[in-house]
Image 1 (cartoon, rainbow, N blue to C red):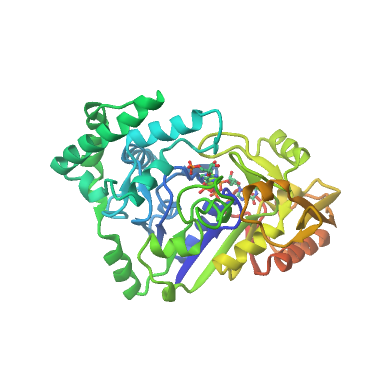
Image 2: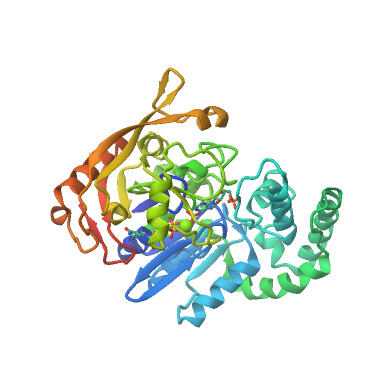
Length: 420
Ligand code: GDP
Ligand code: IMO
Ligand code: MG
């Protein structure tokens, strides 16, 4: 059984937590797009882990983890992440496999990312991990891939060529330049460290499939950060929707058995870009509880009401079969809860997000108001145990989204979850 799991909003929906819960019944977890811009949090017992590029399944000792060719890999950061896990007693050798076709994020990609973000206009609010420039080189067919990276002769030769070209641009713009020597100092030890993990992951995934293993494909970011379907240009540089998991892993579309969409019971967004249902009151409330700070950059996330114009669109383009709603407990104290059901754009009513970011920024949310439950839900372990207004809210948001409610999460820990 092959399960795809995607974020239905702007990332940070709680994918890491749901992946961890689902990994109890899955043998393999595969990342297929994005890079260490992701931050997936998993909590169980008294332990908390944040995974950036290593699939969240690594925390289950029997699980095999694959980083597919659609990802972009910062090798120094990945080596550090693996070492950090090993130090905590989590074995990775023989369990973690990295595609030989994945592209490498180089220091000059981070310079370009930081440089563009420092410009007075056009800031995206990226994670500054070099993700956009790395995918840019891939699309321009000048990128370095993992098979190049672990071959020292090829790596030295290709790096020299690329540094020359990118430094010309950086000098012109006044951005930070890099030297091949400084790259080799950090990257060659990382290449030696990572080489044993690098393999043909397509052949591997297909072999695991033939052996009837359950494979979970762990989406990173969220639907509205998708380079094509998201709120362009305020997006990331990969396809974060379900089809990206096919192209990024080598699993054909007719082998996808189900798509799980993860969404918060409200909405959050990190970085720039329009957010029609944004609410300062919700942000203040959640931040005061120490919640909604980015797992990768520590930035305070912008928060707002649930936007079902977006989640409905996400259900449609991802083909979401089952919904996992997280952070229901974040709404516990509110007397009333609003949900955005459509947008007003001048005199027009919109039921899906417009292509133009200018038009999107002018959209006004049309809200439907629900009764709050003003009760702690974090100890509820079944749908029937939830206060009746919370049940009504969940049923309504699943209906508005147009997908079957399957999983509810009422706290960050593994055990604070139940299935319907
Ligand atoms: P991801 O990027 O989609 O994996 O999500 P993040 O890990 O970046 O952010 C989700 C945050 O919400 C993390 O801090 C999780 O521990 C936390 N979380 C997930 N589900 C719940 C929930 O149901 N309730 C609470 N209180 N926290 C949750
Ligand atoms: P997970 O997997 C939330 C956002 C950045 C920025 C935009 C582009 O944890 O849900 P990038 O560095 O990718 O070029 O930044 O995308 N972004 C995320 N927001 N969760 C993420 O990942 C994100 N990855 C990137 O904040 O707005
Ligand atoms: Mg995250």
